[in-house]
Length: 227
Image 1 (tube, one colour):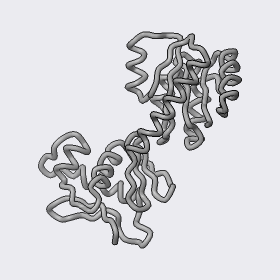
Image 2 (cartoon, one colour):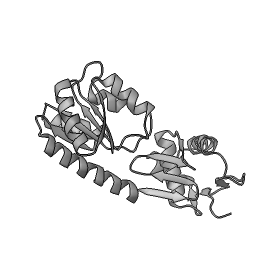
Image 3 (cartoon, one colour):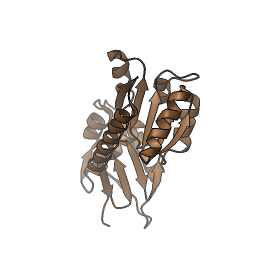
Image 4 (cartoon, helix red, strand yellow):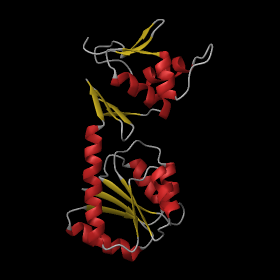
């Protein structure tokens, strides 16, 4: 398993790298937040887990989490010398999956890391939807078509998830607005149409050239299957 370890304590990093490699992990080490962010964004498919120190020069761990621009599946463990509840809550709200306060023994870190990876793999499997060549991972909020990553906004992902969840059925504009955008439609509201146009452009057509999403005039939209 390939890990990204980002911590400005070089002595600690070497200690953890040696221990993790003995446990059959492959470890890439960086010592500042900017380098960590570049590794995550440039090599998104490589990581089985990401370990981020909170206090790093250039960009702290929280800022790295906020600045990630790619869809990635790797669970994130925050590693910090600070143990305040407010830090823990902030890290989790920003998308971290685990929070470990230093000092922590390498053996305990590895045990918690393995548990995190197992839990994340189970959640991803449970939360993955597959409709023909389209794969949608609810936990990671990631979409792929025939292995190609589709870059969607949060609203676009939520709307597409509703359609894929009910593939073959008509989903009303009202349901899309409430469940996908979190608010009801107003008179002459064209938000759904605008988002759908963007989703269609990004996901493209089916392999046979037909549309993936059909507009049902006066009713809503339908993600087509089995033509």
